[in-house]
Amino acid sequence: MALIKTKGLVIKEQAFKEQDKILTIFTQDEGKIQCIARGVRRQKSGLLASTQIFAYSEFVYYPGKTFGSINQANLIDSFYPLRNDLTKMALASYLLDLINNSFDFYQKDPVILKLLLYVLYYMANGKAKSDLALVAAFQMKLISVMGYRPRLENCTSCECQTDLNYFSIENYGLVCKNCYTTTGYAYKITESMRKILIDFLKLPMKEIKDHEYNTEDMMKINDILDHYIGYCIGKTSKAYAFYKSMLNPLV
Image (cartoon, rainbow, N blue to C red):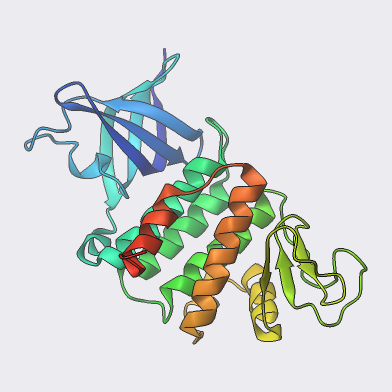
């Protein structure tokens, strides 16, 4: 079987046997794949750096029925500074978890991969005024690509454009104060938060990274969007739960 060469980001790693790892890689050309990297848990392995979590590398592998087998890997970027800040690493791990939960094996989206690499670069190198804003913007752009873009301009129940004060999970978007009910999951939001959500859909990451955002608003928006994505795809993120536990260790 012919070798495959592609660039990809390691989004999950799992110990296998004594010295191997099973890697989940979100690749540019082949989509989400799983490969065995043999011997990479040895300290002197030549593939050690290029097969770690967060590693963006050029991989050469033999495809298989269940797992591919990595033949060669050349590191492009490790985003190493993320490991020096536990909060950044937790947020970045959440992004990898989102990709793993949102894409099936062999499903690909080079645009989303490129967007994710930009976000990881900005976060790792301290280029953004708000890492939470980058994460929220990525959430919005991802769910839009997946076909779950929330309604933000009109009430999902009555179509009105005023008093859109609640983000309803089950209604896939905003509802006005007249249509709001206490049943189901809905979050109260401000008009400024609504406009930010729209901006996150439209603005490129290079602009979002330079904007100042209210931290409390960003935390609430991240909570809303994590809940919304989990509802849409039917999977919750353990990585986001870990991030929240870091902020509130006694809860």
